[in-house]
Every structure is written in structure tokens, then in C-alpha cells.
Length: 114
Length: 115
Image 1 (cartoon, helix red, strand yellow):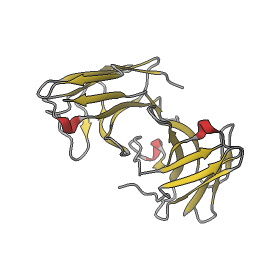
Image 2: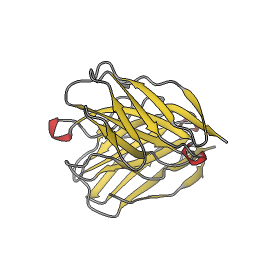
Image 3: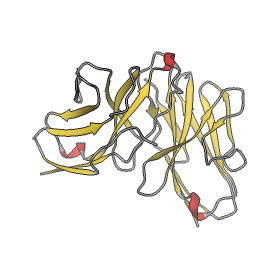
Image 4: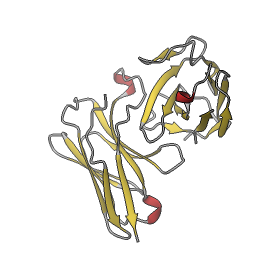
């Protein structure tokens, strides 16, 4: 079973920030939080990941709470092309014995509206 | 990064037949995986394709139904055998390039319809 809980759907107005929450209360110390998205009819696409510090890249920002039990993915200026299913996944480090595969939950279907 | 080519992109097959899906990567990768995505559902891991040895299957998936080959570090195949309409799904290949990689890469998937 997936180790994360996400709302099934969210709406966001184009140009506004999209904030996607994720609960991972059973995360262990060596597990990372990953975010992927799947645009309709495509394979999943990596967005960002983090361990305990907040992270930012050209696509998004990841805010992880101090206790690491939850996180928020932020798309600062959502566009119509950001409409997709967003998956929050926890996974261990490959050196730490993780098998490398990803366990997908149901994700959040984000709809960006004009 | 890794660029994955999956073939075929889609197919419509008769029940009782088999289909082999190919996954070609543009560089050598450490790990290769096969996932299934049933209509309206999330992705489920079928197996880990091991180079030069038998694949490691997840609970609910067996080698007789989903034989997998991985002859080298850039190529793998998944066969869906003796198909039934319940096998209609998207099948996706995924790779992790090496043990320092932080992300997995996915192919575009093979959309299979069994009639």
C-alpha cells in the first residue's frame, strides 16, 4: 500500500499558485519525498524530491514540515498544461536498500482552469 | 537522464493471444521496471527486470502470465500471455539509471486493448 495520503482532486485558476498537500505520517528517517505527475496519456514525469529541507527547481517548490509527516508541492504560476494527476511518493535511498521502484497511490487530479 | 522508447505505443489484440512489449533505453541503466495502469487507476508494479537472470515479480503477478526478459543494460521486454479483456491496460517501462540517481524515468506506455 502507498504510504501517502492526498486529496483526490483540486482546482486552480490559471496564473495562480497551486498548493498540493500530502500526508506521509509513517515516513522513516531515510525516506525521501518524491513528486511525479502524469499528464493524460503520458508516462509519469519527475518533478522534485526532498529529504527534510525545502527544495526548489525550475518546475516547483517542495515544502516539508519539520516533523516530516507532511509536505506541500507548490506550482508558483499554474498553467493549463499543468493539468495532470500529481503523485506524492516516499522512497528510500538506493544505497540504503531501497529496491528503486515507486509505489504509487491514487494521487491528486489537478485541474487548472482559465 | 534517460530516454525510453517503448513499442508498440498501442495495440488491439484478440483474447487468447500474446503481445510482447519492448523497452529500449538510450543508455545503460542499473534498474528497469514494468508497471501496469488499469483504466482510471494508478500505477502498479509488475516486476523488476534483472539483467541476466529471472525477473522479480510482485505479489499477484506471475512469470507464466508476464514473462520478462532483460538481455542487457539497455533493453527489456514484457510479454502479456494468453490475454483476456481484463488485461486491457497501459503498460509502462521505467528505469533508474544508477544508484546515485534520484529520479526514475518512464516510457510513454503501451496502451493495450483486448477484445
